Amino acid sequence: MSLPLLIAAALAAGAVAGPHAELLPVADAVEHLAAPIAGAHWTPERMERAIPIDLPGAGETADRVRSLAATVLPPAAARRLPLARERRAAVRSTTSGSVWEAGGLVRKTTGRVFLTMNGVDFACSASAVRSANRSVVVTAGHCVKNGTGAWAENWVFVPGYQPGRRPYGTYTARRMFVPRQWARDGNDDYDVGMVVVNDGPGGRRLGDVVGGQEIGFNARRGQQTYGFGFPADPPYSGERLLYCAGVPHDDPHGQTRGQGLRCELTAGASGGPWLTSFDPATGRGVLTSVSSFKYSTDHRTMYGPYFGPAIKNLFLKAERA
Image (tube, rainbow, N blue to C red; front, side):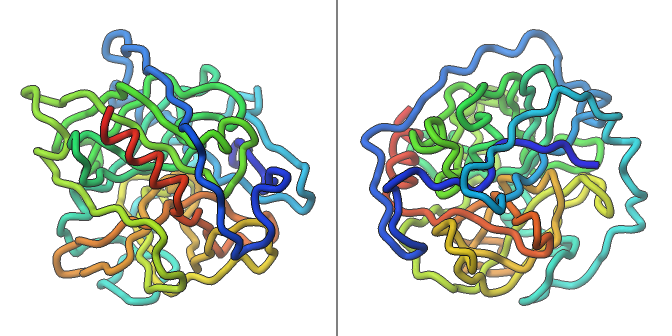
């Protein structure tokens, strides 16, 4: 069983008039100064036991909100299936879940996030992006802050994660940013988090080590999209980079301005990058969304928020931090 987490699809009153209405940019992002991590918190054993953050399930009612459960689940390792159960395939233009074996930039820039929320260790996905400070990681808001609740602690990014390996090192959080609408209301249209990380091994910045994907805003809707992540609930193990590919569609329920992509990736894929204008040969694209939630009545479709003015404002603040 997955751990229910965070926000059901609840729109802030007056924030949006419909699925295609323009979202107003926030006047200011909500910022948090990350506390230093005490000692070697993220040992290989602790990473193995981290529970994949559940994909928030958009509710049937607009006022239903999910929060962290107090129940402690069994170690994630006990719920995983062997890697042999994961599906492997060549690069496809349409897939609901395949192992990424083509390499390229996306292999380096996409990684796993490990964090502690309310005393429980979790895992998410994220991507390094090109930025002025060469230190910005983009993920889902619920992988940084529990909606109106707590900020994440012990937050680290492991780019290019491989089973049992951290080929490019581990990057700890320095400053965290989420849109005010996420921190105030848990609004799924703003389920985006950006983290400025400290320098890694040898004092080198993240962007100097792995590079970064371009980030785009106000993009044309309905473009061919590749979504990446490290799903960790069965039938996946969290040890392999997987992807979905296809043409996303508008939210048929009209509860968000996000888009849905046919994608069967499970918990742990939250925050993984959605890339348009993607070249499978080089692994380069433009990051225009992240994996955010699934409707409780449709587990085969992943939804991601539209990167409009508010998310651009968030990025501008993060890259200047």
